View (cartoon, rainbow, N blue to C red):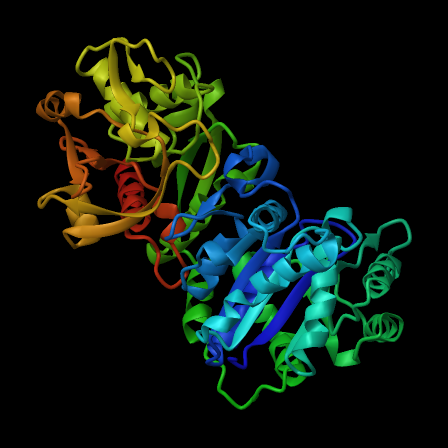
Length: 540
């Protein structure tokens, strides 16, 4: 069996402390020392995957190359490590129970009573070791969703307890992320919530090896000593995680706290490999020292929750650094855009991005925003539904097909310029049944897309049911909206652009999923460059 080391990251006191960022930051530090590292997320909710969850519930649904609909933390893993994740990197309670029930129906348990222990915990342990058994990784980090003490998290905590014992000394460790709140009335940091959280973990049979403490203020030496004493951890294993200007600062902060050295010591891994964070440090320097700024409007209907468009926002950061500009994102709710507000909301922008989404709510506002960007030569990028709305807008206002629509919004439209994909027509179940994962796209020469990608064939990730209706392709093309990218096997239109516009592109896929610190996505880089040019011309 491969000698893979396992790290388990649990959370306490409150959710949203940033287990995903801490996991990704530690993985980055280990990777920078030459260790092959991957991260997986175990989510305690009963949904089989996040694909059926409303973005207001759980933020964006992230899609992997192999078509898994996953938790948004996998986006952080890929952005930090520049390594693709897969189906195996995200597991939910729903998937665990589904697998166990299917085994029971097949008779694999030989008539025994199926129970949480050992059957559910065994399934969890198998999944936790799946990536480690491939031989591809030196270290596998497993993030446990939720907080210690939650009813739904108990099987995962029990599985970690068992697995840690089975792995043996130096092969597994537990990092517990917790909150040290600051009480302004008392003027001091309080450790009691952390003590109770660690106590709850210990009642489940697990001693934390490392304590990572989220805090708004620096932890004093006295307070660190107190935490070590009352939480049964070594003094050097009390790690401060102070609020940072950006998530990209966290690996550097964790390095300053020597988190990687503590972990390597506990896993009996060599510490002598040189840490190489030069590329990361260069990115951070450029991030903090932009030469100018631009303002881009993000038009969507889930803008109240920033995590709904997390990958898009991070892709803007990557592309901004590449262009030496700060991208200020103006989140605009499409439901509140109409003829009376459009000028005020859009005119001052250097670019417009119309975001993905589902359903009819807010689509007319998106169409109005696209028309304004098209008619006023403002750089435009439409993603998935954003591309489809661009096609509808052009059909209505340039071709004169006033009732043009998508059959998702109006199944009686006389001009269905966006229609249901053929393979989707017989689909009844909603979960995991869309066109998902990486698909080929062939790009035509002499187009904006060709200039962006510098290649004739690309692979991009999809998540959609509806598509550009080929019946209208020639009509749209003759009027100036060309299909510049097609799937070579199905002729599905992947990219549209307008030839007599400074920069107007719509894509059926999700480029934001593939943007990383090391490799900013070329489409976002080109779009931000176009917005930067528009800003300069506007100010001349």
